[in-house]
Image (cartoon, rainbow, N blue to C red; front, side, top):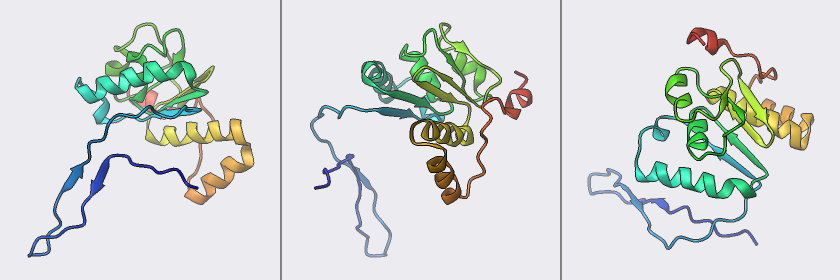
Length: 176
């Protein structure tokens, strides 16, 4: 039997008399313990910047769950959240090159690698931008499930994969 999933946000399929769709409703449920994870993917983007309760909750979650993880993958500025959680201390990592100065200033105990599409250090895999996030995920899939699986996924997405983790034209573009 498939486990029930309830992510808490639901789109209501209701319309007004003039056929306009009404809004989104957030369902509030008691917090349940999260299942154990083998892999946590921390995405980046504008929502990872600044300070608000949701970001602080995400940082706390990363800090608390990391010791039980098999792997952590960060995409773009998601590495900033992992860095603020302290889980990148003493590790090599990279991040989005356009946001380099802001993200790398969040944690001085990280060995930030400026010229890398992605970096692997132990069980932490970090990538520079969104497309690099696809590449690091495919590299991780290849490491865990084999090159044939990674190739099939890349082909089904019609995605031209970069397999060289040092291929990073954006480092030069942004003067790193």
